[in-house]
Length: 267
Image (cartoon, rainbow, N blue to C red):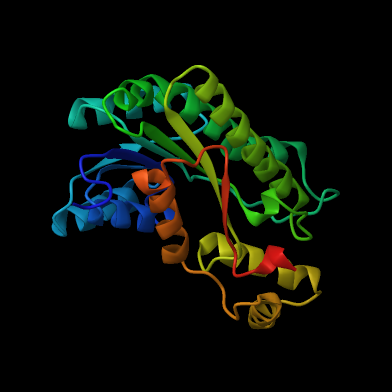
């Protein structure tokens, strides 16, 4: 039996990148998946790809900062698949500006996606996750995408680090609350290092700017030089970890953080 056989998952920011790869691996592992994003065309294309591979998937237009959009997305996935076992709060923004350069508007947008989106998803998916947990030997699961920047300080984007640190501690607190209430919902966080994605490219652009150049290749080389494992991460590296946390293989894990960073925080 596949490790997610019979499970239903909702993944935000799933049209591409880490979210898209997580959707692919979850379908491969036997899950039915709701692909949620604001990128409608890309999201629908992702669903078509999953379906062409024999999976069951549904595109869900979702602005994670909107309570109404969350309610509609959850209603749609319940109408289609009948339950919800797994929530992956993956959608996020990277600002790439110093404290002095960032505007209040930019900060509020960063908070809306990286913090409010996680809160709303957790709150509004909670009833469905709690219902599904009653029928599952090991309950339901939430995986929140934090970052290594949610564990240690970021030289490139202190405000991003601030939001991801919030996700880290929210994860632990939510895990304890749900355990106290007997909901049988595990909550864990994922902490990627520098990954080869669109957001990873933004990090490299910011690093190059802070070095006083436009040389992205040099910035990439500098990042790789600092990584003990000798390469940047891939979306598959992170998606495999998310699938693990969402599966019953992680049945004794809650309030924990899984770090997949090529060794950068070990230094």
